[in-house]
Image 1 (cartoon, protein in one colour):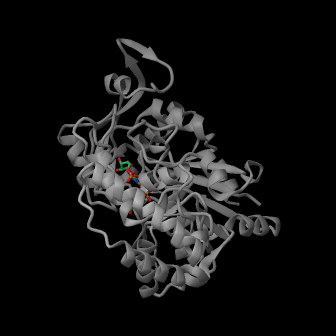
Image 2 (cartoon, helix red, strand yellow):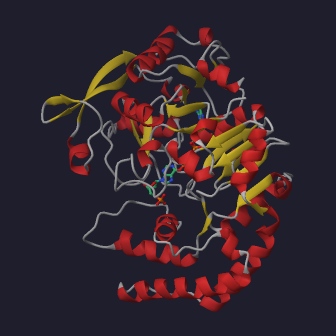
Image 3 (cartoon, helix red, strand yellow):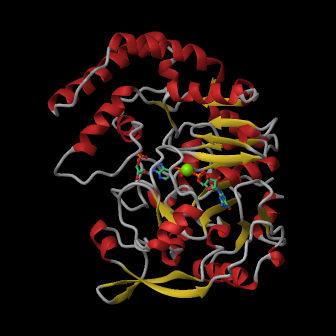
Length: 434
Ligand code: GDP
Ligand code: IMO
Ligand code: MG
């Protein structure tokens, strides 16, 4: 009865949504454990495209329970919009979705104070999604946040809300940020949101514990990626939550002893949205070619994603942090047209090969990647249904990625659709899926 974590091995947008949707066929419950509507998980089912932000991708499978756990930060307006979109597509969301009473609530004033740190002239902007994610987590850790359970209790909500809104107004005034909120109207709006989400709210940690005791299988869906994790990512150019595997336990309230496997999702190359160091970024026309072929534009903000080459040391690092049992390599097809493909096999700093991932932004910026260049295959791969269908050079490329990362490649994705996926027979991943 395997419970698994599926998460991003790079800087996000690795194709988690597609893979979670595919894998969720084998699970009873899919749980999101961190992040908020900064995530954009794209799933294609035939011609129908879904972009899931807060709701776990498992929602698209009839009968699969979707859980938004305590580690997630929820903008109730965004959540209700997302529910509405899925209901319009015919999905019985309210029946399938459960929301943690301990998840924290995002308010519009979180977005206002986000402008304070992002807009300061003497600080480099992170390039956030401007969804109020960071400031909401700040309030959580600062022990002044408002949780879903508080939102659902009118008396508690009113007292917490007025103090929190007052704090934020003070900050806005101190930093000269325009404050155009009608606080009373906002309170009324959130009280109305509470009534609409109340039927889905419960103690999701208890729900998961009971389900697992009863033999149900749970898939934990990460948002963002390990290099955006607050502790293990390229700080400060990270998001404000624990995207790495450890975050699944605290973020969903499940014991580590209940987790049977960790699957890392990685592109066959690498991308990043927003600011921050990116050792293997390609600034040439080839990077542009990958952006075009891979349609590398943010699912949430529409920003062009920065593109670069597969980074072996980075994957070794995220494999170590997460303990990947298996890797899924997505978007192999995006490389189909290239004559040759560089792969970073080591980092040099001040002329010397280094071990591990430097901690400071300054050192990260000074990394010189050491590349090995592999031949391309110049053949379409999207029609492949088994590994043997792939050109020899593509198979060699995948073997090389496994050698460089020290983790098996258990699955290869060659297109956005469910059926454009190969699960490798005999792999650990196949066994974990059961
Ligand atoms: P997520 O945030 O990790 O779920 O990833 P996103 O949905 O933000 O970005 C991944 C994009 O790549 C989406 O548009 C997917 O439809 C698409 N995608 C996923 N796997 C593949 C693949 O193997 N090949 C191609 N060409 N596109 C893919
Ligand atoms: P999914 O789940 C890619 C990035 C932002 C910014 C940094 C901090 O779709 O992979 P935030 O708004 O979270 O405070 O922004 O993190 N970022 C993502 N990049 N994919 C995501 O999610 C991201 N969520 C946040 O661009 O650099
Ligand atoms: Mg995304």
